[in-house]
Every structure is written in C-alpha cells, then in structure tokens.
Length: 503
Image (cartoon, rainbow, N blue to C red; front, top):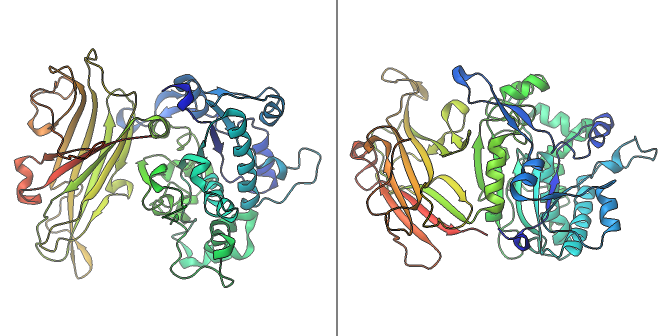
C-alpha cells in the first residue's frame, strides 16, 4: 500500500486502577503496547510452545514500515516538528496527568477528559501529517475512551466522527460493561455505589453518561431499553463496518496472573470481560482463545495482530454465511449450534474460532419448517491486491464447519441418545484465491470430504467459481454442501461467499 494511503495509528490502553497502578503505567514509554510474548497455544498435547511475538507496535514497524517517533517524548516531537509522516504510531498517554510521580498534583481520571485529550492529539496528528483521519487501536477500557470520543465528545461539538477516525479496532473492550455471574447483581451494585478505584466506569449509569451526548441525556439515567453495547447508526454516526471487536474466550490464563477473576465474571469470558459484552452489534468481530491480558493475552498475541493488520490494511473483505438451510423440525426441544474455525495458510494461529468448549458456539434459530435467515460464519480481510499471473501459490483459507444438536426434556438436557462433542455434520471448506491455468485471478472452493489425500498437497483445478452478482464491486458465489449434509441441512443449503473492496 502506498505511503500516502496510510493513516497515523493511535494506541489507547486499558484500565490501570488506583494511583499506584497509574504510576506503574506511566513508567512504560509505550503503555504496554510494546510488550510481546514467547508462548502460543499450538504445541503438542495442548502444551504451550515457544513462539516469539514482538508486540503489535514493533510488528507494524517491521511489516508495514510504520515509524515510532519519540526523541524525548512524543508530545515534544510534535512540538518541535512541523511535519510528520502519516505512517507513524502514537501512544495516547492520557494517564500521565493522573500520576503522582511527576511532582505535580494528579488530576482525577475521567473518561471524558481522556477522550477530549484524544481529540486534541488527533487534531495535531492530522494537521502535521496531512492525513484526513487516524486509526484507533484500543485495549479494554481504551475502547470506551474511543467510543466516548465518537458518541459524545464529537457530537457535542457538532462534528462527524468519520471525519477524524478511519477505523476502530478493540481488543477485549467491555462494550457492554463488566458484569458478574456471581452475586445476583449485588457485586455490580456494590462496585457502582462505592466506585472502588474508579471501577464504576464499567457500570450502566456511568457508561450512559460518557456514551450519550449531553442533549440526549435524561436526568433520571438510562432508559430501560438503553444498551451500552449499541453504537448509534444513521446520519452523522460512525459507520459500524469500520469497527472491529476482537473477543477473547480464555478465562483460565487470565487467572494465572490476576487471581480468581473468572470465578466472578464467569467461564464465558476472557477472564474479565464476558464474551457478549466484548462485542458491538453490527461491527466486525473475531473470536480467539486468548485471555484479557497477560502472557496469553489478546494484545500480545499473534492472533490479535493478524486480525488487526488485515482489518487496517486489507484490500478485500470476504464474508462467509450459511444460507438456504432447513434444519429438521423434529421435536421442539432440539437446539442446534454451529462451530466454526478460520485458518489461513502460512500462519501459526487460528484467526477466528467459535467453539462450544470455549462457550461461544453460534446459536442457530430453532427450525419452524420455513426458510431460515442467513447465518454469518466468518469475515476475512485479504491484503496485497489482486493475485498476479506469475504467482504460483494461491492464498488459501479453510473454514471448519460443525453442526451439533442438543435435546431437552422438561427443560433439562437429555443425554440418552447424546454423544458428547460429536457433531451431526463436520467438514472443512477449502477456499483458494489466486491464479491457475487461466492466468487471471479466480476463486476455487472444495470440501475436504471430497478431496483425496492431504490438504497440504491439494491443488485447485477446473473452472473457478463464477460471479453471481451483476453489481459492480460486489462478487458473490455459493458453494453447495456435500451430499452427506443434505438430510440434515436440506437440498439447497449453501455457503455464500461475498467479496467486496475494503478501504
């Protein structure tokens, strides 16, 4: 991608806690985004294997040529340079004014102040780089700082957030707040009433204040229909397709460094943020088996970085959906779930996985005899432009698809005819993008059950999939399920692949 198309990237970190925690944060010149890892969970026998991940900061410098400009301080650099390159990375050091280590009176931390300071930094970066916008990359509470800017600060000023922000990528942000499985709501009420270490910022009352424009706020607090997860849509709102939520599904590794957090938050979480709360409805999302932070955390993970890089710099967006399926009606007590995993050739990690054992399968609507609505399975971003005729290897994605059924009797799961973790259907869709005999770009798809030998040795052949959409800039094709799936999914069930240009 040419340099003039690149935008400055601003990293926004998460919650630090009390003054002592803030003081520890400000000692780090890059607020933790320079921390990498040496573990990845792909080893034999489910044991950690050595894998050196340099950090999202250093990797973007190495892979995309982004510059890290400091020279005594990034604010000092901006003060002393009239021009900066657009392909540069910046840390929003909003906690500095709340630290007690500088010999000045600390300012009480407020998300609204951090968001206002973020806007000030964005204006300076736009002015000095000539870039029209900046990308925001945030961990945990940092995503709420960004949303405060998008949903309150800029609307209060009468400005459109899309005029300042290119894309927003969040790692484990509690978009829906932080809630607990234990205590029947008592723990949340105690936190919000006492505000220990400022943690009430994750409760609905406080979130309503900093996520709602002043003119729209009600004196009696949020209405019953209000949801912190929802971002505004429509004219003047930030486009949801420019938001990506990375969701962690591994609570156990968070407990290694942070005690028994997941016992309170629940197993269906990253150890601190529940899975449902980490997503904005309508935004792009990927699920990875990583914890909220720590050596197996989302930010310092290869999975997180690969999703980040493709979302920021990809050329094409590919969406896979289950369509035209008709699950057996059977008795009304049968529940259907889908599991998916997305892998890319050449990467040591899984890009996206929603599994029952990770508490995040795709819940399929109960069949009613009619046609079911399309079910989104995965979204991938391709980068590097169209394949060239001289390229011999195709870009290969594989999508693991499994369907499972659970039966209930009198409201209790029924196991008489149940085989645990055994799918009613399981196969792998192999999708190759590249050039073959024709010398022109194409897309080939095949099911693993119909491929002889290993996937490693498989070479796509025959005609590529044809474009079924006459609209310019949109490519659509359908891949029928193998015959073995027809008794379960119906004769017309297919995977729909939709390819559109990505900014």
